[in-house]
Image (cartoon, one colour):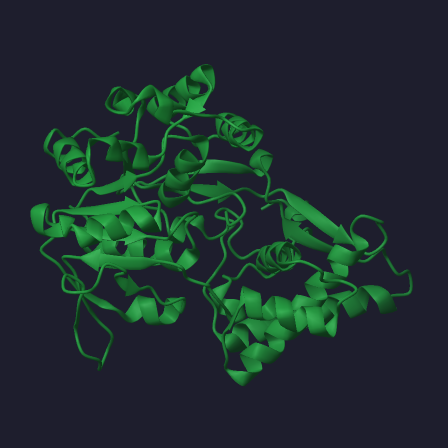
Amino acid sequence: MEPDLVKSSLFYADQRLCSAEILSPSEVRARIEVAVLNFLKILTSPTPAVATLPLVSRTSDNSGLRHGLLSDVSSVFLSHSICTRSLTRANDAKAFIRVWKVMEICFQVLHQGKLVTQRELFYKLLSDSPEFFTSQRQVNITVQDVVALLRCTRQSLGIMASSRGAIIGRLLLQEPGEEIIDCSVLGQAGHVISGDLNLLSKLVFHSDARYIIIVEKDAIFQRLAEDRLFNQIPCILITAKGYPDIATRFILHRLNQNFPDLPVLALVDWNPAGLAILCTYKFGSITMGLESYRYACNVKWLGLRGDDLQLVPQHSLVQLKPRDLQIARSLMSSKLLQETYAAELTIMVEIGHKVEIEALYCHGFDFLGKYIAGKIVQADYI
């Protein structure tokens, strides 16, 4: 290991992977204490240096795609480049202080043996330090700064995922010591996925499903649940109701590990955002690159795809907005897109339009299930 690399980080036990570890509360508190002592040592030295916090850089330049050795799963990873939060830089001073404020709350939460959501954390910080925290986004970024500084997972910090996810279909769930939940007899809203990753890690699964289907939208998920698609095609349906949260990704990853022979298929809108959602399930994200490998799955793209445009009327095509084009440029410049995905994205941009899954309802509300069944029978996914 290069000497300057060692000096650039407080915690560098596993520089090759640059990963966030799952740590006990006492270990996390110890790392926070080390960070504080290191800061005080700098301030009280005979020749005080400029106070900085060394963080693993969460940028595309410092990211790559790690391919599994014993599986088909690939995931985003972050390399060794370090960025800093400095007390003396005008743009960084508040961000520097925010890191300490979040670590202070995390230290207290861990000492009390509690878990908080990022939303709860925001309101606490807004109350205690309104001059430093004015938006949820600032809290979210700062939490990732703390993860990048301490090299531990968000859950290890005592921060629980705010889950929006739901699951239904050919699956039996059981928490230790609790009754079995049969997800095939639930209402169309499905079983709510807990945001507590510790609880999710203890779930016991049983299933006779043949497929796992990720559904981008809650409305589509409920349509398929109401139609009992899982009785026609033995499958498990799962949704995060939009952009995937950590809890939904975690339970999907666990299902993928428990049932490695089941194809994991994604049903998303044919637009840049839909593809970005699929890629997050498949590879993870740069923002959470230190943890991405813990949630990545070998997801295949079921639909909608360019070949399906012939199934929808021309007036169902919606013009791409500037935000769509921004997402498309970001995906194109990333290292994530395989050739077939890049080709789909290129077609979207060239024709300048997108299509939502609901466009298939022109054939009737029961057509969606037939569409999915036809795709699966023909193994028409990429």
